[in-house]
Amino acid sequence: MFLVEFVKDLVISLVWWVILTPIVYIGATPFLLIVAATDGDFFCKSVRRRYGRLTRFWVDKGLLYIPF
Image 1 (tube, one colour):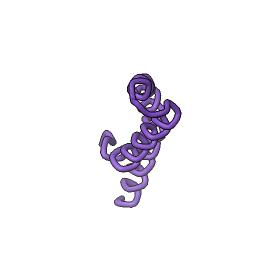
Image 2 (cartoon, one colour):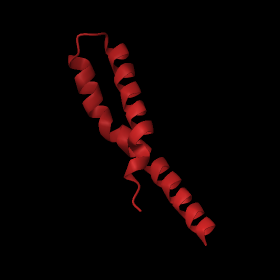
Image 3 (spheres, one colour):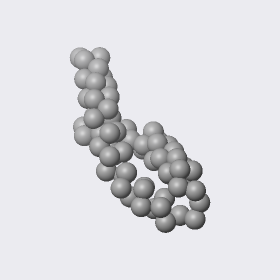
Image 4 (cartoon, one colour):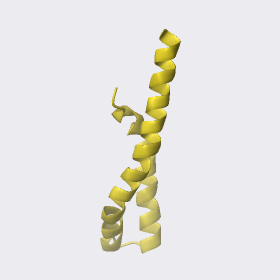
């Protein structure tokens, strides 16, 4: 019974993470582009750096927001 619950929770968390990742990136894109445009650095470099921060945040904290 424990194994079934574990597998169910694992599948739910992976599906949740796969579905929520694009939503987070799409939702954050306008803000990242606006902030990168107002930054004093080159636009491409600033966008790349901000997406890198978003990716690090999502890898570190993304699985904490699983609904179970």
